[in-house]
Image (cartoon, rainbow, N blue to C red; front, top):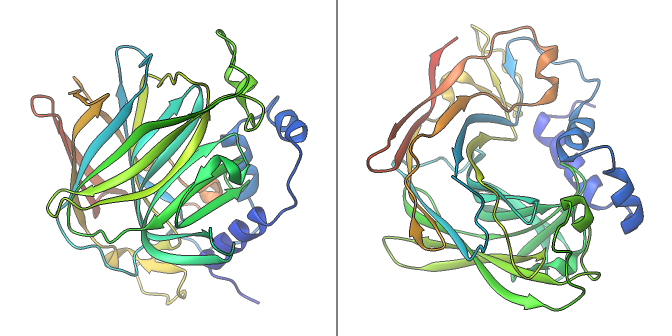
Length: 338
């Protein structure tokens, strides 16, 4: 039986989520000499034979790096404005993730997706929900450390993580994506000086603080709550590194000179939608921060099996940054060069 790449990734997601839960001790031991990147590669590597001249999914068109002068010692909020300047087709799996940060050493990411999914909080049934918001953190697997009125996930498909998701009607327009510190869960205090690994899989053993993710439509002023997740500690320290990325997932890009009609798991490079967008108004603890520079790398993150395909990686995006206004501009999906 022939599976599309989309089907394989979906099966991986479902099987990883439905695995019998490991104990906290087993999970902690797993990461004594590993990390989420190594575990993700283990999961994604496989023995498939791929067609030539394709770029596998997922592909990060852009990874943009912001470095603060120092860590934020008392995190209260993080927000950024995202403006999409043209419509994105419903059948195109596109992810805009403008917050990849850490809180007390726990990596997190989130943003908005055209094809989101998750397990319903009402009946635990897996559902594909279309356009939505997503907020994930690593080194925890307890569903109890999530709060959502929509959907959640707990998986080892990309390292061990938990996630909240919810439906979100977004497309062309301008939105404010925001993380806010919320209420406190009492428990054993985390050590004053800790190694982040000491806080892995700590729900139920230590104090935690909830962080809530919201998306505001800046035209209509409507605010949607995607959900909340708990982080170990009462005081939250945000690391000094921020990464924004844009990603296409589910389908591989076919760069062959002729249309080979490879099936629904592939998209001809000439049919990749072109997306123009900006990121601006970065605010930390409700104070605007304009980076002196933002370094953007193209195609830096891709499927680990891409090294099995003998072809150069074409650049499919451009970026420009204005250090006076703090506006980062992307054009994504247009072939720039080989």
